[in-house]
Every structure is written in structure tokens, then in C-alpha cells.
Length: 456
Image (cartoon, rainbow, N blue to C red; front, side):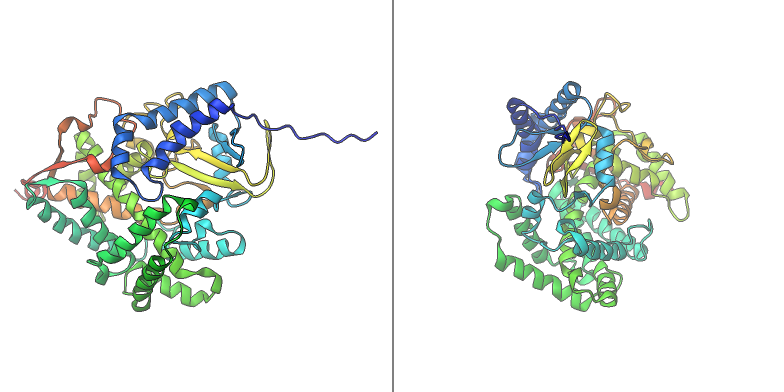
């Protein structure tokens, strides 16, 4: 007699364990603001070390359940958390099939301001939009065609930022930095004429605040329409040496109605926001590690063209220590087979990046500043250190982000000496904290510049 066997199911967390994951891993990150950070909440999470508690909770479950995804005991939704590094690599390497980027919670959030962006698209539409992003952002090329123009923008705004800091009693705080950073982003993405267009930035910020609530908050359709009209203005004039000009060029070449070119732009503006946070944190790391900062600055000055490898590594370390995308979400498009059992279709998968980035059980000095790991030929190797995600879903703008962030750090270090205020905020002699809130970091500027030393 023929017998059919039922596939073995994956292990499922108990209700108490599921509540612990939701309360200690997911809730603090959602409360901080997944799409738009809430500075006060970020400060609370930093003060009470909640991110570190979430990492420890997943380590406990990893020890209990071993390798393989762990299903969560959620009655209304299929969810699983990835606990094994090999599984994390597998999921990211097999995007978008069977692990799609347009996970339901992500769609509900990003739908507030970019409903046709490639990240929340699927099938042929995703392929078309992803291809357009890759061509405009030149994702396979470390040196973008407009890299020199972008670097010039950074130099000009860094000069203005230092001057502005000097008028503010030589103190650099987040609002002052953010003001300069947003100018850089608007010029790089939209063109020089957008330098002082704070309206377009505020419109996106308001949409992102609504997006924090996902499906629980109605979409602000009128605001979204105004924002899209605002972007359309810059698209139509497409200033030279801007991403908008590159977008107009490739969109006109392809002429594909599914490409939704303007719907891709909000993501570029959005993604640059956490990149600014990473830059601010990297500056803090360099202040706490002055010997490395000096060697990075020497590398910039001694090479022609200037090498940014060490400064890029400091940005990557800021992203490893304090990931700006702490929750990577995927959704299974079909039932998937694992060594431990079968996972049903339409399961939301959670990859908690701090858990992998800070796992002292396997990573040497996981809580220390280790930029050297990014300077090796193999980088981080096979361990899932994913500052820009990985696999076919890797951030297509990663090279532009590293270009702009490292150039800004170089420009600031060349123009002045910076010191953390208070100086014990970070210490190179102590483990790095579980979270560093950029909103609560300050620097003191010493008027005697490094450039003056070089010419003395």
C-alpha cells in the first residue's frame, strides 16, 4: 500500500519565547522608527542597552534550538527568525526566489511613499525596476561616472559645515551635521538647484513618519502627490551630474512603463538618511581611535588619486557595530525545505543583523572597532556581515554611499581636529556600546587645522 509522508515541520518557539523575541528584538527596533528614526526613543534604547539584550535573547535560543530557522508562535501570521549564519547567507543568496524582498510588513510601510519601488515589487516589475536602479547607481562599478562631481559637492558642503560649526561655539551636533548632509544628498540626487530645497526633504520626512506605522495608518495621498510632483520638477529639468540626470537618460532609453522611474527616487533620498548617521558615528569612532584616524588621513594625503579605503572601512565598521537596517525581511514565495524541516509559503523571515554583527561566540573582538577586517581581500569572508544586505538584493547604491561618506570624513578631518564631547562618550580601550545614538553625539572643533600643519 502506498503511503504519503507529511514533511517534518521546523521547530517552533514557545509562546513565552515568541513574546521574548517580539518584546526584546522586534519591539525596540520598531519603536526606534524603522523608516524614520525617533530620536527620543533611540536615546532610551541606548540608555537601557536594549539592543544588546535582544542579541543575548537570540543567542539563548540559538543554543537551545541549534541550527536552522525557528518558527514563531504567532497565531495570525507565519513568521520565522534566522539563527544560523549559513541560513542567513542562503536566504540572501536566493533573493528574490524563493525569498522575496516584498515582504508584507515592508510593503505596508514603504507603500506610504514609494509603492512601486523595486524593493516592494515582484516578478517582472521588480526585475525591470531593479535593473533601472542598477544602471543609474552603477551598482557594479566602485567609481560612479559622476564620482568626481559628487566629491566636489562634498568638499563644498564640508567647507560650509566647518564654517557653520565655528559660528556655533565650535560645537558640532546632529542638527548642524544633518543640515549639511541633507544639502549634499539633494545636490547628488536632485541637482545643485535643490541645495536649499528643504521642502522636498520635509515632505519625505512626513511621509516616512507615517510609514513607521505601516498598515495601521492611512496613506497621506495628497502629501504623496505633492511630493511626487516635486520630484517630477527635478526630473524634467534633470541637471547634469546628478542621479536624476542619469535616471532620465536610462528611463528614456528603456521606455518601459513598468520601470516607474520617479518611484525609485524616494528610496535614494531615504537611504542616504541612515548613511548620514553612519558617517556621524564613524567620525565618533575615529575620534575614539586617533591612531587609526591619523593613518586614514595619511592614506588620503599620500595617494594620488587619494585612497579612501581606510575611511570606507570606518564607515563599514560603524554599520557593523550599529546597523542602520537592523531587521532584514524576506517572504517565502513557496514552501522551502531545510535540514530541520519544511517552512510553509508566505512565511516572513527575520534576519536580525546586530545578532550576527555582534556575535562574540564566533567573531573575534565583536564589540571592538575592527576596520582591518574590511581591508582584507575577502572582506568579512562568509560570515553574514551585511551592512548593505547581500546577494541579488544587495543595496545597489552602496558604492555611492561609501564614496560620499568617506569623502565627507576626509574633508572634515583635513580641515580641523575633532574631539568627542564629552570625551568619554566612546573609548578605544573599552567595548563599543550596543547602540550609539547619533542624535546625542557632539564634537568639539579645534580651530588649528590639519591642513595648516601640512603647510607649516
